[in-house]
Image 1 (cartoon, rainbow, N blue to C red):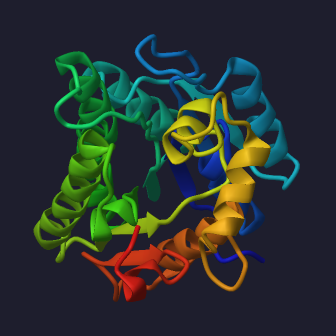
Image 2 (cartoon, helix red, strand yellow):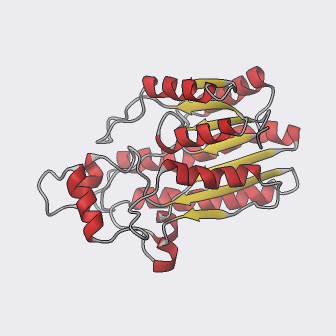
Image 3 (tube, rainbow, N blue to C red):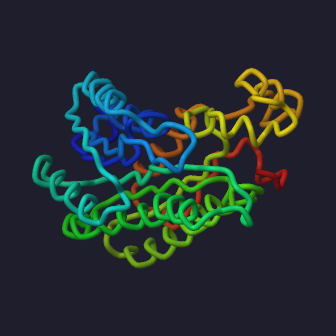
Length: 279
């Protein structure tokens, strides 16, 4: 018997990274899982996004837990696609109990050098897409008088950092959105919370743009150079330089199995960053 037997979860950005880890954590507790992802690259970003093969792979991994799984290609920025996804989930599974608005992208640029296109892409994905996902599930959750919504913010929305003003602005916005929605749904049996992870070892963090911005003094820095720099800086906590996706999934599982006493909260998984006042 799992803590989520019979529940139905929708996870955006679920094909890889944190989304995949969350899908497996919920499946291990008995939830049926719908994994949504854009599974196409965005030309303005200098690193690749998830692929159809990765989405298919996550679906298969979820099914190994003996639960139902479905993969959907969804651009959360698109209202019609997001609403249609929720309609399909309810049609095929009968309900929707959990939303993990997990999708997100990053790029590096000073505010002065951020183009309109880059700003719009980052904010539309990381904030507006989260809003559209949350908005889409509310009517069904109201009807059920039950729902658990968790949106992915960032430790960057607690302490901030240079070169990612667009990302930080969006992630701060997610927290405001979560707190407002939590109040609006407080009497409906629906909780709305945010998680704020620090750096996680996923493709969002381990990519060439990250290496370049962390090591501006190194020509064509590699992953090995990046890891060495983190060691030199004693980045992280007790020798742990960055989180694993499963570390974040434990926080997600805590929020979605809560009996309804936590809402409007920001759960930090930050390797002590809040105490130190750094990102």
